[in-house]
Length: 301
Image (cartoon, rainbow, N blue to C red; front, side):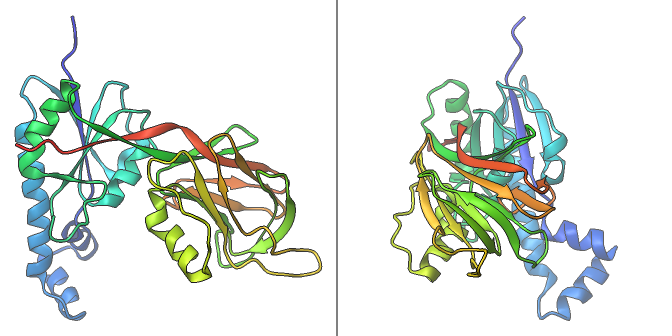
C-alpha cells in the first residue's frame, strides 16, 4: 500500500508566546512591554497573524495526508523522512534553521506577515499556499536551488548551514588557529573568528563584513556553487599574520582550519546551541555542501 504524502509544518514560538512563558501572565507581560515603550496590542497582532497563517495552512493540507508539526526548538530531535513536503511558516530565518536538517526535500516558505518579513526565503503568501502545495505534490512546482555550506571535523562530525558557518572562540577571546587556503597558503592567525558564507548568507553578515572592509571580492549569488570567506579582525604579531583574510571557494575547494587552542566552536546560521567543538590540533574543512536547499517558488491561486 502506498502511503499518502506527509506535510511537515515548521514554526516557532511568537514573541507573545515567549513573553507569557517568561512572565507568566498577560498582565505581567503587558507591564514589561510598557516599561520599554511598547504596547501589547502590537505583539498580539503579530501573534494573531502567525496563528491565523498556521490555521489556514493546516486547513489547506488534504485530510487524507499524513501530517507533522515541529517547533524550532525541537528541530534537532525531529526525524524528517526523504519524501516529506516541508512547510515553513514564519520569518526567513526559520528556513535557514530547518535547512540543515534536510536532505533535498522541497521547502514551501509561507510568509504570515508580508508587511514585516522580506519574504526572501518565505515567498509564498498564505492565499497561494493551497495551489503551491498541490503543484509541489504533483511535481509541477518550480524549485529554486540554494547552495549550502558544510563543515567537517577530522573526527567525523559534520555541520550544515544555509547562510554561513562561523569558527571562533565561544567567548570574546581571540581564536588561535592555522589557516590553509584552497590555494595552499598557510598562515597562523589570531582573530575574532572567521565565517564561510553561501550566496544566501551573502546578503547578511557576510555582506556587512565585506562592506565594512571595502572588499573587492565578488560575493556569490544564492545559486552559485561557490562560497566567500572572511577572517574577522586578524591580529598581526611575530607569530600570527594578516595576509590571508578573505577569498572564494569553488565547488571542489575547501578551507582548512587547524585549532591551536582548545575549545574553538563551529556553528551555523547563528544557532550557537548546535555546534561542533575543536580541541588542540583538530582539523576542520569547510566547503560547498553536497546537498542543496530546494525552495519552492509560489504558484498563484
